[in-house]
Length: 97
Image (cartoon, rainbow, N blue to C red; front, side, top):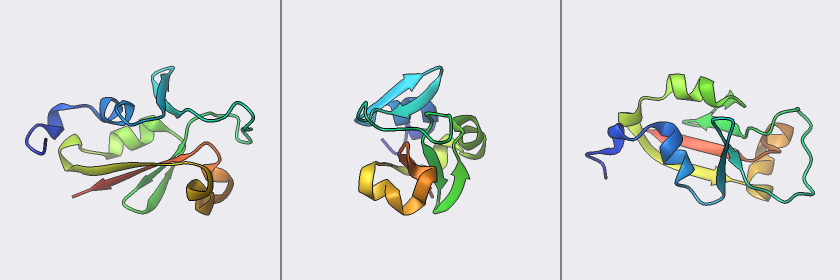
């Protein structure tokens, strides 16, 4: 997997994670229907190497080199609550080399 990981776009790698849907070309974390969105967007919060990037897949996609992605972690519920309201739609943590 390490040898070929740069050949797989970031969107495809995130899509392979459990609980991820693709809506309008961006990843969405599949949650309960009774959850609410305070920011007006369904996009999760993106965190790159412990730095909060924001709620835009396009921003994170521009910053990340596919060859350097080491790990992608999906956080929801109480795990995502450490990010406050920014993490209300879940958090996608990306770790690079």
